Length: 232
Image (tube, rainbow, N blue to C red; front, side, top):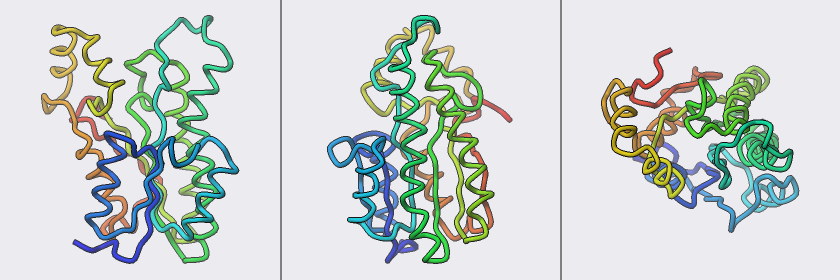
């Protein structure tokens, strides 16, 4: 397939798992994909993001996938420091803002573009990790998606969001999965309508749709790709 031939895509958080699968999928569609991880640029730093986009040039597809819990575990709210709160919010929400801001001028000049934000089921309900900043930041991504869809639609730019369910895609999620034990793992799977965990490719398939011509009249939407774990 070459639907995205001649297009430039920027995907953040590509070191492993979901981000890597998204980048691979967009490449198979013909896009020139720029993969960004911590070794490439700090997407919570405005200057580094601006320099990155200047090097790449106009971006046709942006996927804001960077984020995660930055090594944190659940603690009671009164034990959460401002620094830890900001670290998670910056990784998930501030990075989305900075990368979107950086690519929008080029998309406007080109007469259109596609932005896909990777939120989480935690942003629509609550976080299985119990990390308050993570749930808050992921909900923030959903609100940001809707606001930017409203603002950018007149320029032919669509902005959509995916809220993944539990996917074993990196060392953090593997550790989380093991922490549930056999009983907890069984309960989690039984709470999913399709009775299986998701894969990184399941999420990448959603990005593929939002980046395609088939989604040209879809914007401001949030799709839960979670096997029916959360039915809205």
